Amino acid sequence: MAPPPDPAHSAPALVGRDREQATLRDHLAAARAGHGGLVLIGGEAGIGKTALAEDLLAAAASQGAQVLVGRCYDLSETPPYGPWVEALARAPRGDGLPTPPDLAGGTGATSQPALFAQVRDHLAALAAARPVVVVLDDLHWADPASLGLWLLVEGRWAELRRALPARAGPEVMAWAELARRQGAADEVRAALQGGLPGGAAQDPGDTHLDLSLRLQRVAAGVALDAGDLPAAEAWLAAHDRWLAWSGAVLGQSEGQALWAAYHRATGDGALARRHADHALAEATAPRQPLALLAAHRLLGELATAAGDFTAAQAHLDESLALAEACAAPYERALTLLALAELHAATDDRAGAQATLDAARALLAPLEARPALARADALADRLAATPAPVTLPALPFGLTAREAAVLRLMVAGLTNAQAAARLFVTPRTIGTHLTSIYTKLGVDGRADAIRVALDHGLR
Image 1 (tube, rainbow, N blue to C red):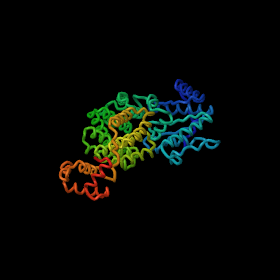
Image 2: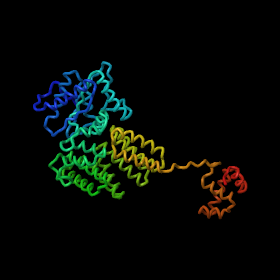
Image 3: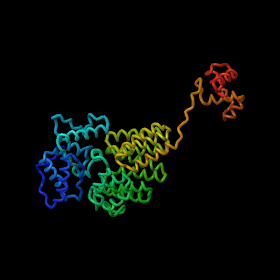
Image 4: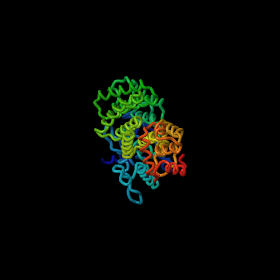
């Protein structure tokens, strides 16, 4: 993909944008003085957002700033970090500057945090030489990895959500998704009025298909979060109707996953599993890594609830590997939460606590309140569960049942009496005694009782 044309030489003349230009130039002046910040230019398509950004870039370049531009593309399969790859292609080389991170291939980075840190450090190194202005154009079409990287570089989701328009325009989708992840359900519902004013009953054809489908999924998710199953069912039925009308493939997996969550909430585990399996299949062909990791995570959660811990571990391991490959910290945190719940279900308190701490470390900077509340609930359960009692090791390699039999012999019980006490047959008691005599190195009951008394087994 070729770098976009240099905006320093292509900025158009603007009319009627004096106030916006003044605001942007104030931010540019602050950046040149060492006080960087985030500005989001939002509005309806065709009103000149890109032209306004290019005017700023021309001014920045003329004042000696380094200009980096990356663009997102409507209805295309943008590779992970696509706009960032474009932007960093303009970054200068040499003169003691670090090599730009390899976002396309990930070489040199051992993990998602390491890759993000490379980008942050590279931008800091560029800014130390001269001011840097980064523009990501048409961000509402950004791939999730690019959006996640922007959020990390800029700091916190809350700031981004406040900057995004909440009522109309293509940005409403990104705003609604972020608002849901931060637990602002009322604000999401208000945003839906701008994006889908007809609600779940709105017919397809009047609004942009991809944006509408994503808003329907956000609406269904918010309803599920609130326990409003009728509303969730209405939104999911609308999502199915729009998918059938359009013949779209993308969105099928996410819709099936939401149906699985719906049926899990109704208590129908079998139907939830069936929809989760469909979600996995839809995410596999064509391959959609983020949908795939969400489907694996959902299947892992369902397997944990069903007590199939081996299957749960396999699905969650796959989900975690995909989250790492996609550099998706929020998705990684959700999978870590599911893994912590699996550890708790298998009485691995140490593993549950360590995994829970790792999830919280990712969620806290994002202010992802619903997921943090889920983490807190798990922490409360762990705190309320008594720690397992570690019994001292039994001598001579005796099993717990053999030790119980030996104690009954010390108490003077016959084989028949011991069998009745332990709800087994006298023959089983005889088998235990043979093993006990061998382990203690004795020939009979009297010697076994003596050894037991010498070692405190009474």
